[in-house]
Length: 304
Image 1 (cartoon, rainbow, N blue to C red):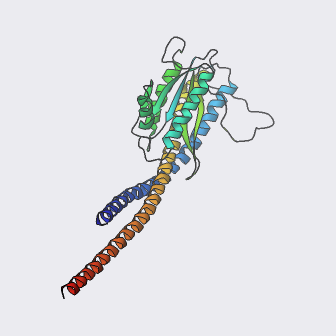
Image 2: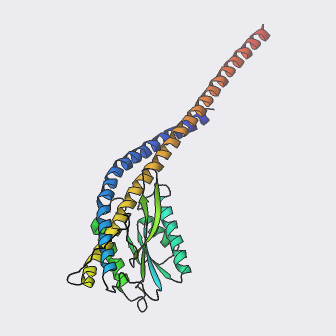
């Protein structure tokens, strides 16, 4: 009984130490979510307006720009997957990787090859473990990305897109991005979107009626697109990184809160078991004392 009691107490100390760690991580993630939400809110209007500007140039100009004109015979597509650098965030990274796998299957059904660009150690390790080819990889900033990080990723994607996919194995005809959209503190959804070639105007505004405005581009529509589209890709990638960072913090907070609650339940269970073991030990000691006293009394009566 004494050995069992020591085991319970040792496990209780271990669980209490783990609970302190999970509670601290929960509080840290909760404090970082607010800042991450503010960065998402600040970057979203710029990304949306830049998307509308690029869409206007592509729609109201007669320029056949490679970044807005789909390839007549696409053969290869790039998939950018944004995951986490660290674990303890529940199924956050797994959901993004799973969404990327489903997108790759859909693209292969269209007859396209896929090229993987990965952000975050979780996705990188997943692909390395399975010996899959990685065209580009970045890590170390998943929970706090900067615009410079997004620009580095965007430059690699644009370089691959501008290359001739027919003759260059590094070239791609389409660019897709997989990230986790932050809906609320409790809801984050992994999504896959096509960034290039540009196909739709991202706007929830109603369709305008009446006479539509006329556009004139200086010096030319092509030069305007050359200037706008790299910034468009950078803004879209940066916004996706910020969305994913906020989702990562929210997922980690939720996972750590669940771990802390489970630790509380385990501590209560171990406390009950330890109390039962202690009670059994006391009962056994009392029985041994009573039994010893009876034995002494019987021995004394026999000697007389």
